[in-house]
Amino acid sequence: MDIIINHSENKTLIALNGRLDTTNAEQFQKDISPLMEGDKLQIEIDCSGMEYTSSQGLRIFLMLQKSVTAHGGSLVLKNMNSRVKEVFDITGFSNIIKII
Image 1 (spheres, rainbow, N blue to C red):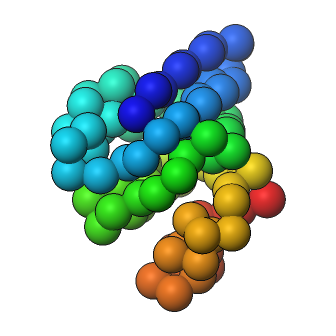
Image 2 (image 1 turned 135 degrees about the horizontal axis):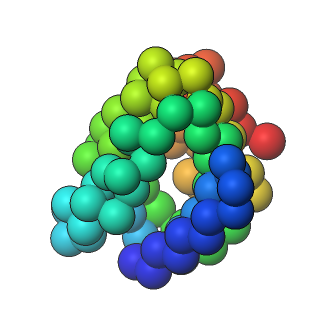
């Protein structure tokens, strides 16, 4: 999985490409862990290149959502393909995390 993180003032754009699974979930969590500490961050994650997410990936998205909300920020996932969106829908994560 490729993870590209771009910061601009109080907005952070993240692009994910590939599969988010047990082989790279730990690295993804390390890459975004600094974002879990920032106040009032506006985070957008472009999921157009994300092919799959495992339960570990879902757990990381949930941790990020809780942390960002606790610090007064927001998290939006966008451009998700139908297969990945279905995983979020089935697990109820699309009710917890804003997906556009």
